[in-house]
Image (cartoon, rainbow, N blue to C red; front, side):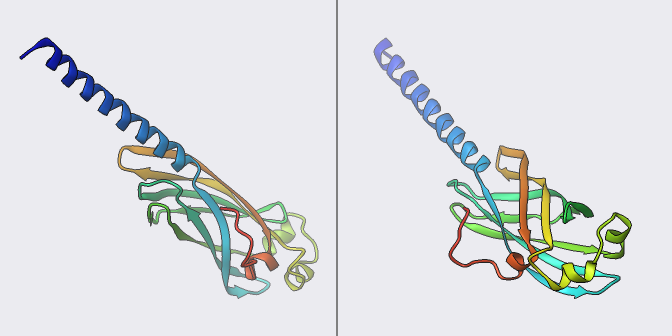
Length: 172
């Protein structure tokens, strides 16, 4: 085989490898730009001894590669007071250029808020603008050999906003 042909083949393989590497780097960066928003909540119970709800969080995938959400760890705060630590083992597939919903089940005893210094729980529950719910934590995103292990989640909304999220506002 002639030297020019060998150089051409090696050069072609080299360019292909560079192009593939650039594509995967771009997709990895897009995975890091995945976007999360609180989509709403389903209230199961609100009483003086138990609050139970499912918080729905949408995760949007901006890349061309499907990924899986794993290793979810969240802290849930009510008016800056930690009320629940959640370690969610569920995995959720998010399609390429799509959005999927992760359900976060939250349960806590509102009497614990009294112990931590929040007064007048009744007015918080009645006036949904005064109850601020925050979800902070991280999750992992995995797509084949690409992995983001520290995707940060930091969402803050009032109970009123969670129960009736605006339909026309999109963060993602």
